[in-house]
Image (cartoon, rainbow, N blue to C red; front, side, top):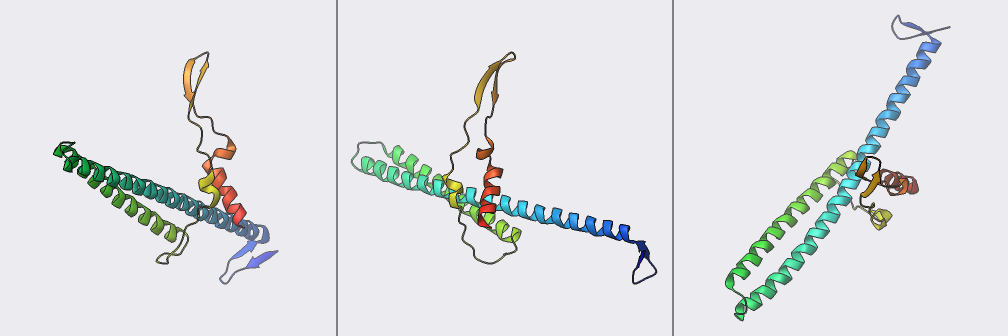
Length: 171
């Protein structure tokens, strides 16, 4: 049995079925790649937000330290160079905060583009992702070849597994 196209093309049914199957497989692959890109962008936003919060906390600590040093310098209990150094370190921490905020903004733009919401405001909820324990540090293992370092992470602690679980829980 033949399938006739618009032009003078006649294909056996099994060839047309195979072409449809291949097109569906390419579509599934593309959808998977888009989902993977979106998941990666989401994780980058979460990491950038964590870095921004961490750096902001460091700036607050440096501001407190700088005020304490300034008070000690004002009461002539510390040399003036200490105040200059603490102010320089505070300025450096503030610069790092500006950089962290820029990176977080860029990560949000990349996520918005990855999920087709470019230009729209969004709020990120990392959910239980941030409640997880960090993976264990590499452990030295001794064997016949001597000591070597291997990273021991279980499937439950792998970041990819957590992302998949979170995405499935959202459905």
